[in-house]
Image (cartoon, rainbow, N blue to C red):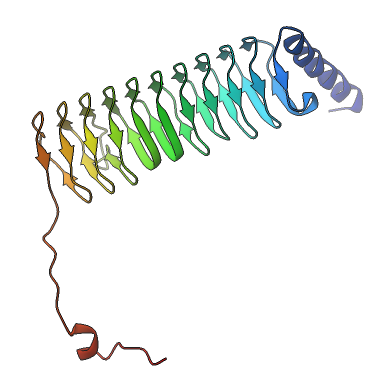
Length: 231
């Protein structure tokens, strides 16, 4: 690329950003936003530095998109906040919080008033209104209902090495921390999963599933093995 060609690209980029600013979009740094000409952005939306918006992306009104976010071919609803995250070929509802450091892979649909928190990955899944996955969770090939809570470290085990399978989590379910949902499996409406469980069969509506080994305490084991460290 010649310097002249680079200048033309930069000129066009600034023209796009200025046009959005004139329509009520707020930029932290006009020169550090990278927005394709095809992107639509609503009035009152705030764009942070080093944000990239690509393809057929539509951003609603009064959205906040913070630094180092990439959104491609996706729809973001009014009043939503996206912090330092990647969203690809997906949709996010209104008044939802995404990130920081979340990763939404293609064919994911997140509803209104949801939370997709830090280090949460969602792929080819639906996530109902009011549901939350606050941190360190993988949601793959799943249909998650409304008002569901996924604890820290929940994994949807969707791949057996040959095929992908789906998991269904009903409305109002509560899935405790460090739970493995081994697909295909269904967690029915209003049920609870105890922390540390590995779930392989249907959990009936309104029930508690505890699927973990019983703790065993062997007293004096450390001393007998000679593992006590001198201080």
